[in-house]
Length: 324
Image (cartoon, rainbow, N blue to C red):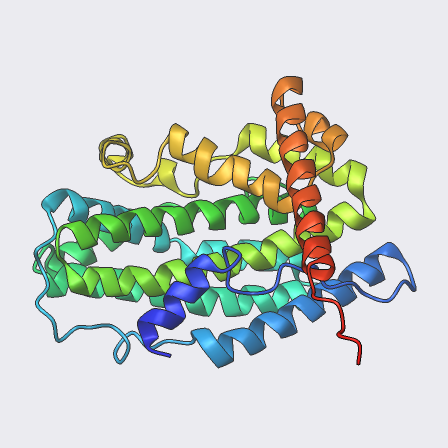
């Protein structure tokens, strides 16, 4: 498979390119012990899949040899804005690591996540300079402008934070997918190449966190649904309040169709509810209006019934064994 086909597979197969089944730990020990077995198993699976199919190099796997710079100034502003968000990576990694340090699976994943996100920051900044949209001095000034601010955890508990990071990673992935389409329309092949890899990483990150939330739903369903509702009601993308002129940047991002309330509702909020497989009552407990919850539950029940019917038809449509 070519690099492009590998990335496209990551983006289209189950939103993360991996089987949807949630790993299940043996039913032994405390709930905490079961969580730890599930999270570590998830991390091992994640790491093996990344090593086999998704590792990429900023220098070798981006098409830097192609001409860069055809993207618009608005696109460059959006890239710079995303780059500014990534500059708080030390805070994201450090603060979350402090919270989940005692969980081997989550802590090791956090270290891996920090490595992959650092490549995102490097790739975006390299494109801005290679495309002559920003100078090295301008990027250094942006970094200095951000040095005095620090990002803090938006939620207090490990369970709330995994709900938050699940939402945030899917939102970031959607941002990159939408921006990649814009870069394609503007014929910037280098930026398109960068954003393909970034989108694939974010999709895989979302898949890890989603599986973690599903584990919580299995073992602590009432508490997890309550946390999901709390996170949904208080969700905001990271570091926006810390970045200078974010109102201008945010307006450009929304006007370009990259991210905004409509994108959040249609491409993030509703897909997450579908991916988690919440029951009709859980949807209502998560704050979904009764009419919407019933509609979503009806749709999923019909989809499940259609799948069962398809399996049945495959078996019953086989020709009879001919007799001799």
